[in-house]
Length: 413
Image (spheres, rainbow, N blue to C red):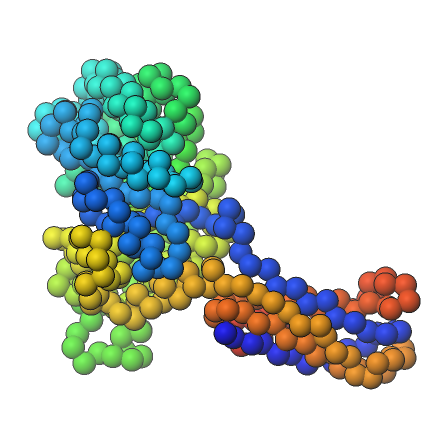
């Protein structure tokens, strides 16, 4: 429990009383929290175990389609059935689904743009609906700005990518017009600025503008060398953030605002040193969460990549692949920052009745108002003091809004 106490001196007339209000966050107004827990198709219950570790109900599970065959794009029964069961088990759950545009070596953006694959995506829409996955968010051709993807949009393919995206959206909406599928246009954060407009399929086909962004750097600052700790380590983290990640987030926010679309961050995570990552980077996690949960940025959802992938370690939780809690993260400090943020979202806030000294105040004299606000976890609490007359209850010309963060007082303008 955390208790915040304050003493305020001011000027007012008549008798002063205090109105001190703490408001817990409205979960419906927060970005959706998702997680990727690996391609454990028969065990999406690992998302439940992740929720237990986090202390927060995660309602957005993430899965990725294979890239090996049309059968695993049109109707991956083993995958759709498991996720359908998970979604139906609790109201409000959704699937965040990475959808392949075509299998590796078995198609092209040009053919897709011509409509040759429309029938396949109509089949996918029907199959998803049959398993109760109508309300899913679909990441069509995710990370398309990466040259490792079969649907890579570079090298003069930008227009064909945009046209392919439109064809798939149209096909799925035509097959299931009442399904409520939503479509995420999702490159990597470092896409060339010229390609943003060239690959964008149009506002009628996009529900979210997404970016994937991991804590990796290739500017000589990562990996952090042995012996570089404390301010040395923090300095590297801050420089990478300021030079590499912050400008990208600003660019995407501006682009999304120009199209009237919410942002998403479908994949993000810390990275181990062996894959040119920042390691146990608390600064990256703090900055990411601050951006995601700032209403001004209009982030609709985010999904942490909580796995040890072959191309990078990211896992913060203690959840193993069987849904147990035997895993031990190599990023304990970043994990603590992540969990503490969610503890704050769950915090309850209460306020005591204020006391005023002296009880009767004459115009031009000073007085003191004292009260306390208690939060069940370290969080941000806004406390507004209103000085009122006990005879008329009219608001006086003096009021103050105070902002507390972990017992530190700031004055809000």
